[in-house]
Length: 269
Image 1 (cartoon, rainbow, N blue to C red):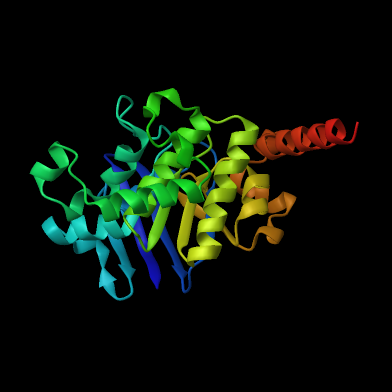
Image 2: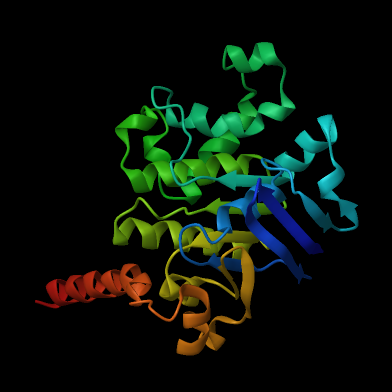
């Protein structure tokens, strides 16, 4: 289905991704982990064609993605939706209009400029917001929502594209532990319920173990681990994060567990 073959990206003398090769033969939820600067974001941006690869080939169902240009490139990007760490919403625009911007490739410039969307699209946008538990915020400005709620709006916008693949570039890096849990569970539900491929860049080992079917570990641009979460041993973690890693990478999930335990104690008190 999805195949990376010796995909490389260099910025001058700096190699951001070094001969990355892997194959995904069915929809699954994949976590890409590693320290900052390991090449995780560049890997996703090459798949979405926000960044051109220097060498190698990316294919999806036989389509050579790396060669796409113009309308074909835009069509692929609509099928390979990207969710960003900083949400990329229009702050002063209402939530439902932000979600409807996921259909920009389907409408004329005039319709988009004046927010003239068909009732069918509006109803679908509200249904998606309801699915993500934030339909009551549809008429509010995006800037009025919390970070976790804004990230769910960004997920809803991606779903409006009805993509084959959802790419999430550090989707929880700026969120508190409880909102991080909600966002990750939303992505997991989308994978399971829609049978969509989800690829998420993550910092923490425990988050990858908790939510992903497969983990790709990167270090200095190279893939140094590719396997099931249960194979993420201490040795594998050191290969990814380095022998000097303090394993604070697991802190986010530990904080979530602590908060959940505190909530349970309060509920039973």
